[in-house]
Each structure stands twice: as C-alpha cells, then as structure tokens.
Image 1 (cartoon, one colour):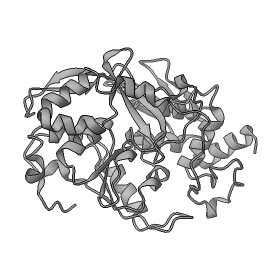
Image 2: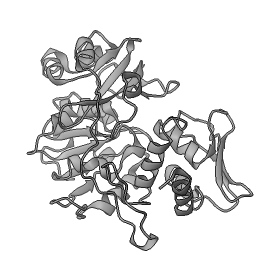
Image 3: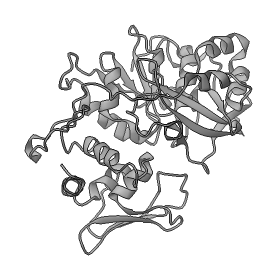
Length: 369
C-alpha cells in the first residue's frame, strides 16, 4: 500500500483529522472548530491552539503563540510523538494506523491489508522488530550514578541505605550536557537499550513535602529521545522499567520515569513501569506485562481517559496471546490522604509528602485498589 493511499485511509477513518485532535485534547470539536486549547507539546498556559476545518474539509491546527506548531493532523501527531515528519513519515503512518485501529498491523516485514470499518481489529503484536544497532551500554554505564542532580536528590530523599539499594539497580545517569540533564534508559525484556529519554530538571521547593527540596522538569525544554543520535532511525516503543519486572508482583503503570524511580523506593511490593507520557498509554506496549495484574495510576488530569482505557481492555484477550488483561485504574489515590494534590500532579508528588518508609502504612498496608 503506497503512502498516498494510507494517508487517505487515515483521513477517512478520523473524519479528516478531527478525531486525532479530539482524542488528544479530550474535547468534542464542533463543525465550526474550537479555540483556546492548550498545546500538549509544551507548558502552554495561555490556551494558544485553534483547531479549524479548511474549505477542502481537512482539519488543521495553529498555535497562535508558537508558529512552529501548525499544520494538519499528521503534523500535529508528529510534533506530539517526536516523529521527524520528513524522514520518518512511514513510521508516523504506521503509528497512527495502530493508534486509531485503522488496519491490522503486523510487526513483521509485510503489512496486513486494510479491513472494512465494520471488522477493524486491534494490532497484532507478534514480535518486536529487531534492530541492527542498540545504544551502547558502556555509554550508560560510564555515566551511571554520576554526581548529577537526580542522583543527589535521591540520596538526600531516602538516606544512604535506601540510596545504596536504589543505585545498585538504577540506570539513571547524567547526560554529557551537564548535571541538570538526566538520561532515562528504556530497555526491552532482552536487556537491549531501545532509547534514552533526555530530561532537564531544576530544583524546586514545596512546603507539603517531607524533604525540603524536590525536582521539577524544566517545562521550557521538551524531553528528547536520543535514539536517533545513536544511529537508530526507528525503535519499537517499550515501557520504562521492564528490566525490573517480577512475575510475582502486580504492575503499577504511571506516566513519568521519576514516578517509577520513587515507586520502587516507596512501594517496592509492586512492579513499577512508565509510559513516558499520558498519550503513550497504548494497548500494544502493555503486552510485555499483559500476563500480570495491571493497575493504572494516572496523573490527576488524566483520571477519565485512563479509567476509560482500563474499562475498555480489562478482561480482553489480544489476538495471539494466551492470557486476558486484568487491568484496573486506581483513580482515587489522591483522595487517600488530606494532602492538597493539585490538578496535573502525580503519585510521586503524594509520595514526597511522607517519609519513604511510612508511605505504605499511610496508604494502607493491604492496599485494595
């Protein structure tokens, strides 16, 4: 199937792009368009985005505060998910087809033929695509546990005993740009480093927290996946934290890598993995953990979509799998205490209100989700 055919198929299946915008912004977009939407690609405090339909019928978007963000649904999806639309257009189309259940994607070399709308199926995950190159582990090992801002914060937060346990298994390391730049390594279940996510952190202070200072992501600098810089043109997305999966434990799925690192320290009786972003919660990436009970732990501004996702997939058996999903959504975690958890905060913020050895007791030793 050529690219033009696939583009047309995606447009037809998404109402010429309107569904792509509605899914991300979590609103219904009327025929006349919608304005004052917040750009999810950066910390947009002004509601700078407008979505509108052109005379041709195709839906477009424009950020009135940042001209870099404009175009159709393909430009928008590329900006949202970090695709280079010029050099990775085929990968972009494949991701959109999978995300919007447009065709039955085979992760092998051949693609399945499109299905009629009445019989559309979810993607079939047969085997993660092999790559000829992976990020060199020596690059990570050389910089692991360097005196970076994240490592220093964990040491102060949990003390020497907790830090020693954490540092023996953590792959958090500093980027060559400096101590404020942190690399989170995404490993597949074979131990290959599929990508590293670069994040810049700054110190912050919050009176609610048990420890006097914390880390906040620098919202002026978007996180960047560096697999392309290491000779990998494409990678198959994996969850953050797969290398720590214990088949005897429930898996808690959160959005951010920092929440995984804290979860391992505050509630070690559970597995912790991260999607790497709210919009990265997709069924296909959960298949590495689908044989285990899964609990989604959304940020407070994503309670509805993650609850809906859990309801959609709980009890289903993906094609080619011998197990059925056991997925629940822990959507009231922020109500278990009297702490003032704000809209958009995550469970890592609640954890920091307590000593790491006390958090399990505060939340309930026999935690029933």
